[in-house]
Length: 369
Image 1 (tube, one colour):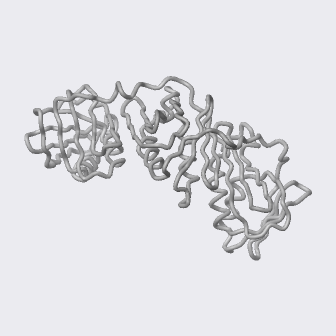
Image 2 (cartoon, helix red, strand yellow):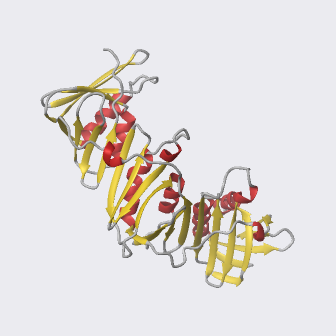
Image 3 (cartoon, rainbow, N blue to C red):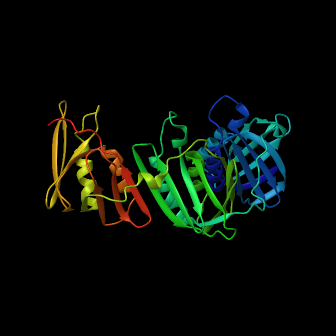
């Protein structure tokens, strides 16, 4: 194998594919990526047995095709430190590795036997659903942060994707807040799907998208979901377990509605959270007739009181929230105004601002005073 390619383009490819390769030592082979070189360019493959990727990258010249397995992170670091625009890769028969030449710098990286690398499936002619690139990215950005970060409720470590006709919903929740984003899709075969996708897989789906990808194709199967773009194919195993019915969680009726400028609400929460107690992060909202008071108090640090303009309909109320949870929902929006819907200090609150996104957050217990 011998080829020459653009260093930055190869570095970007190694970063994307290397993010899938396992960082654990349970199976050292999975820390590698496979580099397949043919007349039309190179294909990089990696997997951690939960997420797998095929990523194509064009090359300047290919003098000899080849197939090598090399350490993903090590080669990525070498490409990052090189300063030339072009780099040359050449396989070394002695140790199954590659020799990398970047200007006056030369490196040799040992490799592994390609026959021992896991088989990674290809997208092929699977029946699929198509999404607009920007709509898909927006759904992931608006939901993945709400998924659980621990392993105590395994199903909550992913986002649920529900395809029904030409409508797709993506939902993330950790039991304390829930984010639901909606988009349209092209579904010529009338496929239906309701699966939980791991966050690593979803973020890899987004990471492989490039500017020329106006659309992307996704195939839903019993145990896996596959995505196809102009350069990449990504497979992720589904998360097992049951997911809550988000339609039952999202409040449909409420007693009180509070309309605020989103930037005012964000600024007030950011200011108040600077003085929340570390053992009980909460900001109290006190609803008046034409304003909302945000307050926080910490015996070790001090206290904060911020008032913002608001239109309050339905009565007054005191309620407290984890400010970070509310801010993450607000940051997923772009609207000028938001509406906070409330019933009482113990029931879920609903945050609206855009027709294709809704955010639900549970209040926290208010401390005396």
